[in-house]
Image 1 (cartoon, rainbow, N blue to C red):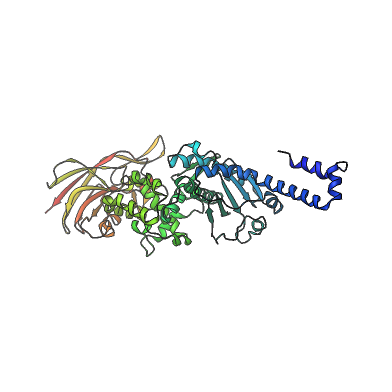
Image 2: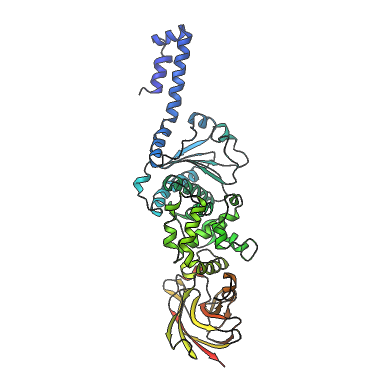
Length: 483
């Protein structure tokens, strides 16, 4: 193809050129020639876009094409364009390092999205998105002038994805802007490769789940288990759950699955959708089922939810209880696998005898025994053993006995102290069933308890499920029924 510069020189810049003389002599020819030049300029400015768009059509031909961008107008408006392998980022943010980090993070995310959804990296080689990062939500004038804000673009608070484009406003803090970029990118990836997003709770929950990340030494890790607030400045989802638990705004597990699309006009629902996907992804009884939901993403909302609830119905009662334990001790780093209810190991005696022994692991939260109790019955509980509840460094473990240690406290009680709770499996609701676990009795090495309700005895050491990973060992508990 002849270059634009050469065409210009041949046509206009050389007064000795016969074409030039002809153009001066014949106005109609002149107009025609200028028209050709403008057309060539336009084609050139959109040619690169067309190249990758053709590749996108092969990935998912059902997604219709969108508006074209005139890079000449973009440049004239003062909008910077920075391109990576999988993203063209248009922005009026004047921070080169931040912009380059965003482009790099998006490019690194693609292979991790592929891995999470079970796709080959090669399948996404030609996949690309266009992002429009706006520095000031109140003043998108430059983007409007550059033709980057279509007239039918809805009013959005933070980010909005449509086909192979997404728009986002600069957020406070580097983490949250990067999170929003990855959130919208997840929407785009799911649309193209899963042929849909699924219902609103799943779409937004997955975008939040895979937007949670670690950025360390210019390396990205998606679906990261955040350990503290400092890792995710301004994200705020954990705080939102904490603030709304035990209030009228608290959502049950079924409420989460039925969040309507319009609900996401309120940021609180992003927190609950994230919590739902985090729970389903990591709970031992749902993680395999949840991993297959991408295959259902193209289904309509009603069918998706119906089929998902059918798959987990046999475990729904267990899940409801564990969900309440999760949101009531919500913390950064919460391990759902360690925090869900599990069975204690019966190591001596027989169920129904006066004395029964159990091994209680220091590596899990509440553990359910087979010891049934009736309201008003009295029991003596004795415990022994040494275990580890943490460490200052790999060579300095925090050794602990059932009375706990006062180097650190959890919920106002010594870390590692033995607690007992009663799980009322005959109660009608999950809230009533776990009430005794949310208000545990303090035991330590030895104590006598009077059962406040009917149910089964449960034990744990006093520690948040967010910090059980570095625990080791177990303690022995002996239960003796008193007359």
